[in-house]
Image (cartoon, rainbow, N blue to C red):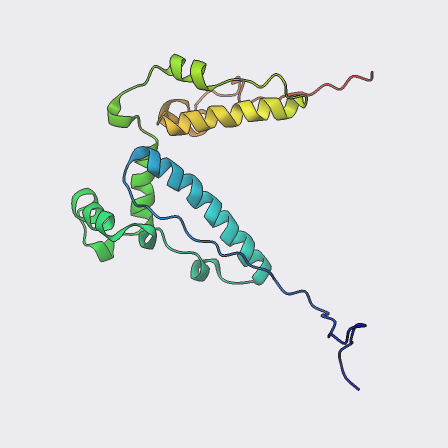
Length: 185
């Protein structure tokens, strides 16, 4: 007796679902430009989340699946970083070295020039008052704020790490949990 069943067309009915994978390419560092690194860091975080999710489903070992940061850097850039920034041989550069340098570059203002912060926020930070869902409206505003802080290298001054590490931040508006009131209409 066969251990499988056939459907009306004579095809074998699958009893176990087959996992579906999408090809997920690791983002590469092709430029040491601050804006390119900000985008790369965001894409890398998304890539790592996807890989962790995949490993949770397939029971693969994360370290054997994910592409290393070092191997994500264009060879010429890696060579120059090793020589001039890290003062090491290329094969001695670690993922940690590169991530530290990327975070430092992304979290500092470009060429130590502070943009007109008021103008940047005035021009780019708007609350969508047409959004009916108030919680979504506020969330979108904070997401836009964080994006602007990251893109303009203001994380060292205005970023969430700065607020999290503040000595007396218990009265900070950002740290307080917003209360949502629902009124019966």
